[in-house]
Amino acid sequence: KERAKVSRISAKKTSNGVTKSGTQLQQLNNNNNYVCIRISMSTVSYMDEPSHRDDASHLAVQMENTYQLGPSKCFPVDAVKHILKDVLTNYLQEEKYGPELCRQMTKTIAEVVKARVKDLMIPRYKLIVIIHIGQLNNQSLHIGSRCLWDEANDTFASFTFRNTSLFALATVYAIYLE
Image (tube, rainbow, N blue to C red):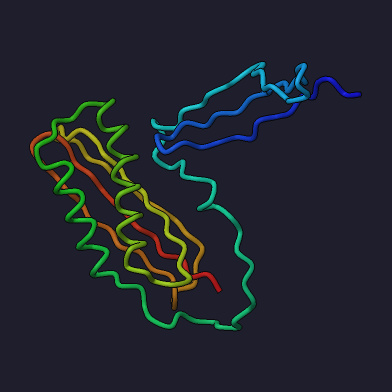
């Protein structure tokens, strides 16, 4: 008769952004009941990386083809520019340039912008958000980008922000998915 069995605890994501996994041993005691003994446990925190979300949000959804070759409504560039202006102004108005602060702010602002643009519920567009933050020190800077896209359906919106210490450039690319 089997007296012990080893099982793997599946990865569990908690509400505070911590993933736990491990191994446990179930041993049969004198009353013929299994008693759990944890052998090992590992914990990984993703709180520093705002792009990590619950695994449930990444599940693949099977959809049938719609054979729709163009968007049902155009991407609202003006509304997205307003979102960019609002987010950059709220987050950076009183901030002073600091390399570590700006590194964190680019991640945070990109996630906030992406969430607010997704709230507009524009179907079938893939969103790419790029944020540049730098020190304002009487220097010249040229930022360029190149994309391969469909001129009829794909578009972008951008906004530049400046205060006494730093500058920020936010760009949202909207790529239509057929």
